[in-house]
Image (tube, rainbow, N blue to C red; front, side, top):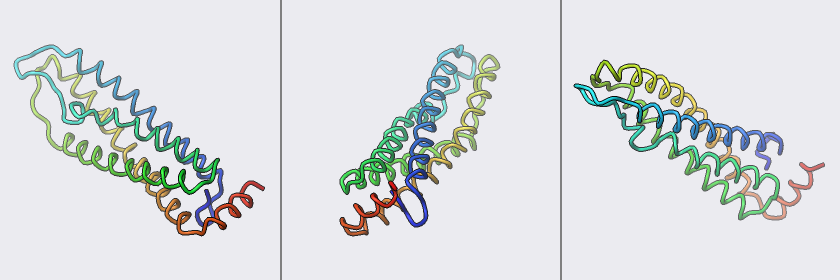
Length: 169
């Protein structure tokens, strides 16, 4: 999957990074699940931010599928796989942008919580800050690969097979 001067290895690395980001998000979702489930009902209630309620970190599954489709379309060059990788990368950009907006909203508003749950709320907000950076990274990677997929689809089918043969040499 070449886009401009990028090689097949670059697309494979982008796909692998997307998979790692997705796995990281799944682990952070599990961490937040354990963290928020251990809260004690206090005077001000429990802290359940909107990103936890919507499962934004669990959306890492989409990043894993997007990364796998990127790798697959790079290894087996066909128009169908390229279109599938493009669709999944666009979907990853959209989900990462929505998660980014929800996380910024969560971090900008903070309601009082019981002193018993303050530690969990503070740690959860730190996890949200880390996820904020990874959402930006996912948007950048998925957007870059989407642009490369569009450039590749604009080529003729004969050019795609020639391009694949040249990049494999």
